[in-house]
Amino acid sequence: MGIKHNTFSKHILMLVLMTSIFLCSIFVFSYTNSFADWYGLGYIQPSPMAQKFIKNSGHELSFFDSVAVFYSFESNANPRNPSLLSNSFTLKSTIFNYLPFSELRYGVIGVSYDISAKLIETLIGGMKKGIIFGFSGKIGAELETVSLLVGSSSNFADFTTNDFKHYNSVSNVNLIGSLGLFAQLPIDLRNFPDLLLFIGYNIGISLFGPFTPDLQRVEGDYERTFASIELSFALRYKF
Image (cartoon, rainbow, N blue to C red; front, side, top):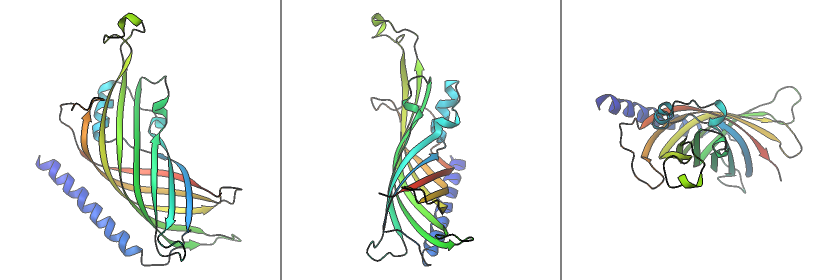
């Protein structure tokens, strides 16, 4: 227990330090749109709790199983007179867990509140718009689910038995805080004027779970705190 407590304390200390750096950085000039819609893809690392069930299944996840799509609506803190900060709400979901042919499914549905400060713009060559660099912080929650296909029968007579093919599923709810860096590049496509590249450091804790579809707790010893790296890119859609 002492080792886990020390690990959790280090995660919290790192998050506080990163938040302090972020808050200090917002008092510089910001390049921010009044409103923006972003659509993107990102890579999600399973939590230690999910990894334990994945390892026990005897299967491995592919890279694509951890890919998520997301939508983010961004607005400036003061849309009429753009200020130092912008904020946004982001929705995300994995996609390959909805495909019917996978024996092991890993799924995430999540939402987060984000604060960003676009700090520096760099013009290269004859660019009309520069490359913008900045910081971003967010806090969010996600529902994480691991499902394993079991059973071998597809006969109607076995519908009420364990032999009938079905998915055994467990879920948990994670709370995640993140700080990261991003670069916004102008690409000047017809309806997609900007490309956003993001790398973030996440600190999370599994608050609830693991539990079955009928909300029964799955007994066991689980690691609940974790840290991970998040990678994503997005396109801004211009109506």
